[in-house]
Image (cartoon, rainbow, N blue to C red; front, top):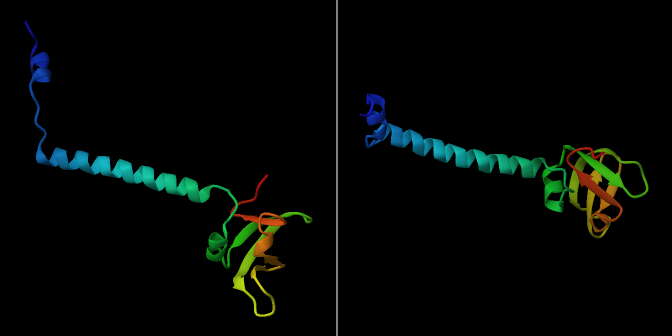
Length: 114
């Protein structure tokens, strides 16, 4: 003979509308949370900044590694073209970097690399 708990446990269960809404919300929250965390991981990775990312960093510090100089923090002041020279440049608080040399003689990152 079955106990009352066994009978209750085996009985078919139909969730209430509130429970259905709550479960749907939790599922959506879990999916959105994963998407947000993936985005944060991607944004917080310390891969080299692209030209478009450098444009968004104007007024902010970036870690710049140079081919012939010690790496250092720089403030991006301007990203674009200059009237006195051909091509695209990044102007920082201490130097001017040519776009054509990006990845060759200099590279910028969001965080200091060790």
